[in-house]
Image (cartoon, rainbow, N blue to C red; front, side, top):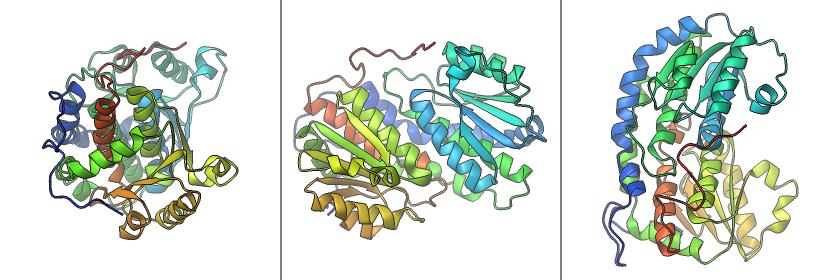
Length: 367
């Protein structure tokens, strides 16, 4: 069940905590960053439609947190725009230099720094294959922005903590704007403007998640060495981003799985030594299955933390926090915030610096 408390996450709980970290500060900046990003990018929807005219497929190119944002973009493209979408394997371009006909394709390349050579190289490879190219980056004038047919610059401001927080959520927002523009091109009605207008307030509400609940979640995670995250559908990217934040910030090995894949064998590993984190949108066809899954893993004596979902889903979990008051379609723009807040607290409990995780840098280069 949920832990009731009226104390917001922005206030200290009973335990003594260090001065605010960069990560905590940047989590708190997300409402303004999301509003600024949407204000900058929504007017570009007609330009997106112009650049992508006549293309029928979407190819999403990313790594790390950006890849988790891209997973949301894939689901959204197929559900909201009715457009076939897939995630690129950059090695096809950078290691194999395969010749692929992309003349009917839009390649959307996502990188917060715009400087990861692998992503830039894959964008240029996509161009050679005939694709129209869009860059989503937080860095205007970066190599990725300069190479693309159209650059969508997120307005997160400088992000100094290594774990991506505000750059991640603004990337998710940019992908939502891109897909909404494509939906209009495909003759799909129902632009998301009314929902976009509420995103900043929804992010603020997520920041007010009770501190006692977040501390209880962090405390439970601190007691185990094994964590599983699971979700499905539009919120699956959020599920994987939750796993990544736990791994890179708190040095916890975490496996992120669709609950459909989990049932195909890995469910055998679930027991009292493993904690399960379930992530769900506020509504939609995935919620009943995740509610059922909460009961199944609890029967296997795994403690369950729930993020989002409806009241029945949260009641099926040991600890749970509501997600944003939004549709399933745009919930992933802010659904990650309670997980970010929990991870930052967990790092403190484990004696780790969430701003500078071991062995990581802000820009990661891959071949």
